[in-house]
Image (cartoon, rainbow, N blue to C red; front, side):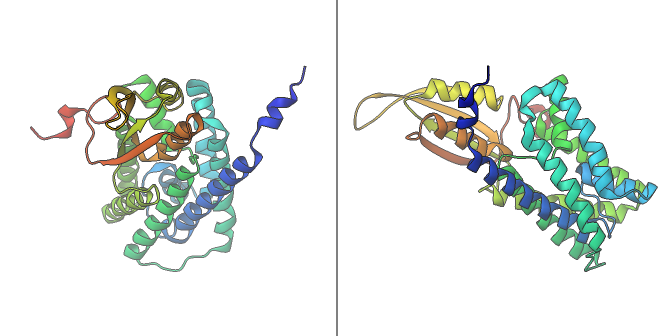
Amino acid sequence: MYNGGDLMDFDFKNFFIKSTGILVGSFLIALGLVIFFVPNKIAPGGVTGIATVLHYLFNIRVGILVLSINIPLFLIALKILGKKVGLKTLWGILSLSVLIELLSKLNPVITENYFLATIYGGALAGLGLGIVFRFGGTTGGTDLIAAILNRYFPSISMGKGLLIIDAFVITMAGIVFNAELALYAMIAIFVQSKIIDFVQEGLDYTKSVIIVSNHSDEIANEIMRELGRGVTGLKGYGAYSGKKKNVLLITISRAEITKLKNLIFNVDDKAFVILNNAHEVLGEGFKNYRYSTFN
């Protein structure tokens, strides 16, 4: 029997805002790709970088290639990772692919200067990705590959997985195009990552978060279930009141900031939360100490 309460509980306004945010972010990514990256043979990692290389090898439209690579990845990730993949990922994939196709038909190329294309393309793509992340979405691609690798090889964190994939794409670009264009692609990745960090309210790849709440157990369970992150519980007390307080400590990636805040305040809108920049994080889910130094 149909339960009308499920539909009534659905937040259409929130869904519309997030979908629109992902669409805007996808538009900026597509703009950076079509105006700056593709015409100048700059392939800054990811599925769009692979699509750029394949476009010049086989003369297939970039939007079609992005969709052709992403949809199988989405289906594989859906089977392996389950509901964590989500409809927002599918929406991001479809939005990006369609917008690349539409913008490509306008042929809006404005520069053939590699350096300008690298800087402005990286800035536009980074801004777009930052907005997509901020609205809880993703454009699929290498994020899905890294998540699948992490599932089967836990020693390969998401960060390592993304780095491996980007290195592979840049190497492929260097072979197909030339070494100079591969170097420009590396600069583009750097610019892109810094802009993503800026949009996500921080200039560091990771954030350490301290949470003080009377509903700490429920928040910890939500974090572990939805984000798959470990949570450390600490015992504290209020210096003024003398009452015992439960304190949670968690470290997350830049793409998880918005989702974490939503999880916390959906459980306890009076929670006290501190976000700190983490310049280096060693341990499970992040860098292994053995590979983080040259010692």
